[in-house]
Image 1 (cartoon, one colour):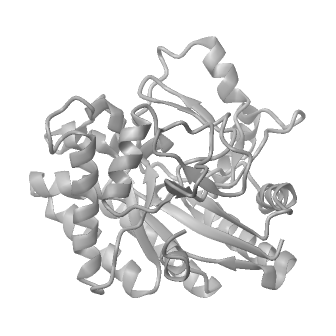
Image 2 (spheres, rainbow, N blue to C red; image 1 turned 60 degrees about the horizontal axis):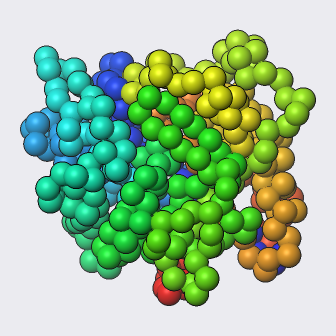
Length: 354
C-alpha cells in the first residue's frame, strides 16, 4: 500500500434530545477547543454539519444558536477545514415548549418518505445542501457541498431514493458506513454487517448496500474505519465503570430509547464492530492504533485506502482530546510519508470524478 488517507471527521450537532446548560456549552465551546488542538497538530478536520437544526432554529427565531452556528462554520472554513452535510431530519418535525426541545419520533429520512415536497426525502436533502452551500459561499465562492454522513448512520430504508437525491444535488462521497457495525433502538436500525469487503467502493443507486457499484457509478464510500470486536475484550459495562473519570461532562440528552428492542437484536449489537472514534472514553490511543493497523493490513493489496475517524464535539472533553492528539502523533510516527490527513475538498480537487 502506497497511500493511506485518513479523514478526521466530526459530527457538528447538538445533543438531539435537549441541552444541559447552553448552546455554547453543548457545541460551540468544545468545537473551539477542538480547533485549537488541531492547529497545534497541523491537521485538517471535516465537520459534518447538522444543517437542519440551523433551518429549524431559524424558524423558531433562536438567534443565540443560529448566529454562532453560522459564524463557527464560517470560521472552520476560513481556517482551512472542511464542512459537509449531516442530516438529522427529526428537527423539522420537532417542537419547542418553554425553551425545551420536544423531539419528534420521526428520526430517519425514511420516516419522511410519504410527506409532500419539500418535507419528503428529496426536499429535505435539497434544502440541507442549499443552506450549507449558502453559508459556504459566504466564505469562498467556489465552496460546494460534496459529501454526506447520515444522521445516526442510517442510510436505510429508502436507500435508493436517498442515494439518488444526494447525487442529483451534488453529493459524490458518503461516509456513513462502518463495516460490521450494528445498532438498534426504538427509533432506528443500522445494519452494516454485509457490505463489500473493499477499502473503498461505490454505493449503487439501486440501494443494495451489500454490493458495490460495478461500473464506478453511484456515490463513493469512504467508510468509518472499524474492527471486529475481540473475543476476550473486557465487557463494556465494566469498562464504563472502571474509566468513568474519563467521561465527558453532561451536555444534553440522547434521543434514542430501547424499550422495544428484542434480545436477538441486543446480542447482534453486542457483537458490533468497534469504530475508529475519539468519543469513547474506554478506548486508549493504542486501541485506536489497533483499529488503524487492522485496516492497513486488511487492505494492503490496494494502492490506496481512504478511511474515516469519527467524533462529536458534544461528546468530547479532556480525555477525548488526548485520544485524538495521541492517535494523530502515533499514526504519523508509524506510517510516515505513506499516511496523510485529508478532507473531501482535497480529494475532490484531485479526483473530481471518482
